[in-house]
Image (cartoon, helix red, strand yellow):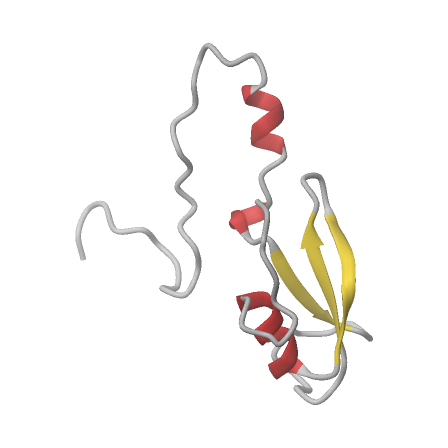
Length: 97
């Protein structure tokens, strides 16, 4: 293991963020508007619980709107929710970020 190895599991996105422009007056505001770990789509089980448990139950889909995650629909099961989050689902359109 190297000195600069990022800790954590390899399937997590990098927490590194781009450098900011010190002359931009909206730097602090723009930093707060970034989604957690740059994840723009997420899914949660309808009745709560862990995401990986009960893969045949419906999921609530959420999209980042620049401030918080807002409901974007539902998926019948875990596979459909993961396809939507990855952008490979049947209704995956253009994503404006």
